[in-house]
Image (cartoon, helix red, strand yellow):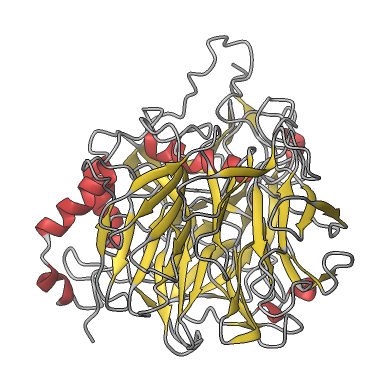
Length: 633
């Protein structure tokens, strides 16, 4: 069977073309490649720990993960030069014609690649009730009147489609300028016409990545065209992320997009040269775009349309408030937020998620993140909780505070709210967990207990043709309920969207691979596309002893609560790990400056010698039994 050229090959070529001058030295399974020293130029005082870029967090931090993600790609610079990713993709397309790509066989021959998955991970980090898990989903779109046909957007896995309710998925955008996906919209008059907003606009997401523009397909995802220009032919989308994408139901040529700055700096700084996002409009089916509104913060998280009035739209601006237009975007006004006294918080809040009742569009719910002013001791934003859920019954003119669920929301990261299509009092809220209220927010029931749904909810939508059918996207993939949230079915099947942070390979057995993933544990591959969970948590670096491959190491993200490095002498078989570096050996695990996924490397000449790096190196010469800190500067 012939398959298309997969993402691994494109990604490897992009690394070559984008970063040809990097000199990287790193040990993987006894093989030596070149990697730069990890340094931090943010402090010139060598007597103090350098913390600005590599500060660890007291709790699991999404921004810490994002910083680590960028650091590996930007070094030795602080930012990635504008446009290099898109130029690299175009170079690959030019060198490898579509006809050649279609003829590549599914086996490793010469320079070709074959995917090894994971198609999905059985049970993931929890009990078997989880079912298979995949990776972070940022958006879901269900085809009009046909819930067998579903599109999903993955944080860095592109757009996928199923035509049999999730029994099998097909990737649609492997050859496009970016796999980072923020939003999807289907033309209500033509279900074959699909628009995709690239770039993840998901708060402080782990590995959140900027986009390249708006992708458009007129044949159900078989082919795509990228649009990113305004009427003056200026590229206005590169470096931004599209969190909201709305097609006017009265005139599908009119499309609205809500943009935020795409983060790609080591400390969450924006893409170079991009100052703000805002609301953009196209009146020619996405061919050209113009900015129509920008609040002071400039960061649009969500864009929603009144289902009963296509002239009325709402936009949420991070830390600024909610804006509304009633004349198809000619004029906008703030209806909630800073300096407005109508029951909504008028100062010190963060991200806002919005849900509009389809059956009574005057009813609006907003879940609001607590104040960005609450910082950790190192003056970096920490994961903030749910401030409250607010309700308006008059289209945003006035608001009342509702009884919020007892939630462990990381609301700058996982924060979404949706309203039943037939009942304005039935609402669903997603944070770390999933919650439901049947009485307008007075009481809440948690739906994800007993490991029925993966943690960290990012997308909730209702089936347009069945109000009791709900789809939920999380850090572990997609789930569906057909009974209004009482029971859930896993439909991840063959989704290959798991985000790996680091992999290591066996020195002689190419089928044995171990890797750490974002919120889906440390995984082991042994054959085909099957991967087994080896350890839970956010998996970081992995290393295999090249003298004795039965011995493997893996790292967790550094937090005050976590062990840091574990070792298994049974090839990483689950429950065979023992701690070799705990938080106790660090100077102060709650503040010791470090990358979220701190590097672990093995000496290419001595497999018992490893170095683990925070702001200072920690070294072992006996396979992790004892450690010394070689420097405190």
